[in-house]
Length: 287
Ligand code: FAD
Image (tube, rainbow, N blue to C red):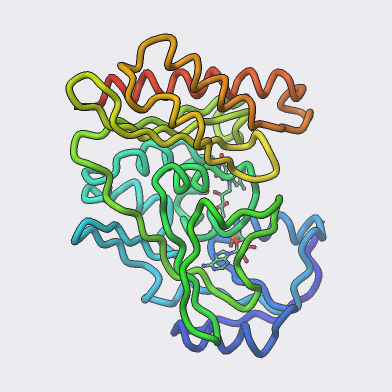
């Protein structure tokens, strides 16, 4: 199908983009890589009258790791994220997850900001951001504010972002040195969205788990931060009973649709397997 007609804007500064969004409130969409938005426009699931293309806004393209914080500009592509050795050193789950998104052509254009702002429960980065306790920086005509990734997602395609705000960057506390990490994704074929996926970040000291954060992709209307599942691991030696308790706690909060990826019960079952594999891989990697 062909999208409806729209006016195309290509601002060069953030202030210009925010002004355009305010001028066309309710009728404008931000355009980043377009790899989620354009397909939705073709299906007429999105019918914006104005597209505000942010690709020329240099302020949105930086990657910075300093003072215990990672800051990634919203317009950083998934390919740029994979290419950053500083990011891979500080927070390797970001490269590991990016490599599981779609294919190289899509990763060359798709952005981290579009992936997390989209609100599609099938996107991979939102759960990773919840596991990492990231903050999303939002800029609108009323100024700047931040929203935790764990509070951002309200329903499929509904988020805490006001339609007049642009996501400018993502801030992530640098995980502890030697932390364990894993993103495990079950998909039907290369380039597919997850049937179910799990992100795990954990810390281990003297054989005991001292911190654990788990989040799930595509097993509900929103990504899910599985707080109880993480808590089931803390203080344990990450043995089979603890892992099994975490898996049960994670499965208990899932509510996946039955669709082409399988019946709801199957996807809940797969979610538990992804959690188990991710805990085991993170445990092996933890120093
Ligand atoms: P766009 O499509 O431009 O925007 C997406 C939405 O976010 C729009 O509503 C837009 O208005 C909004 N938006 C974008 N940037 C901002 C911003 N800075 N501030 C406010 N709002 C903003 N994704 C996965 O996670 N995993 C996959 O396995 C996967 N497989 C794919 C397979 C195919 C064949 C395709 C076409 C896409 C796939 N994707 C997958 C989606 C892809 O990663 C997208 O690129 C990504 O979801 C959106 O990024 P984008 O930059 O293209 O955003």
